[in-house]
Image (cartoon, rainbow, N blue to C red):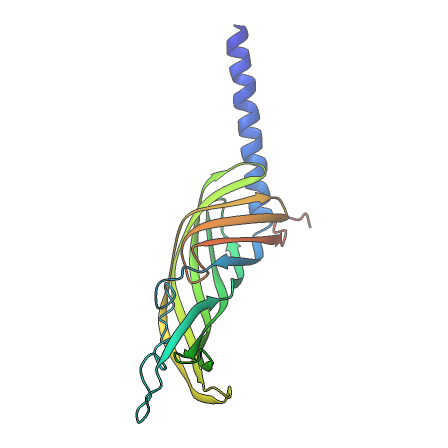
Length: 216
């Protein structure tokens, strides 16, 4: 009998915490987040950012004997600003705005002097759908999917850092985040792992607000 009573107490506590978590989620449906991510660098570009940098000076100049080689490809962390609206305890809609910059210097082979630079300023807007599959009083686990637009501002500079090429290049942005975690209540932290224009790993802070259930 005692064990049955203990089980009933545990069950009631779980239901109580679940109701509190659900009430809090629906009472604060608006959510702003600011975070940084780790871009996935490949040999000649950035995953989900279609890079054209690093090729302009990778061949001998026409009419000369000088050969140019590429330096290391360098990238800033991704910076993301996102908004979500929670319709119920498990379903949210939102969007991410992301910025990332990368560049690659080029050098003369014979004296290793600076020869120029290629780079990208990359902006992405990605609508996202979020599904919460675990929720407690302070912790949420979730997954997201989304499709959006990447707009790359490609540029090239010569050895005097004069702009020689500048153009916009649109691409499709894809988000697939199988695992994300949020910890906190109104003010919270989050971390995500997955393929996204915001990088393969992201961390940040967020704030929930907008009480829909205030007594009139």
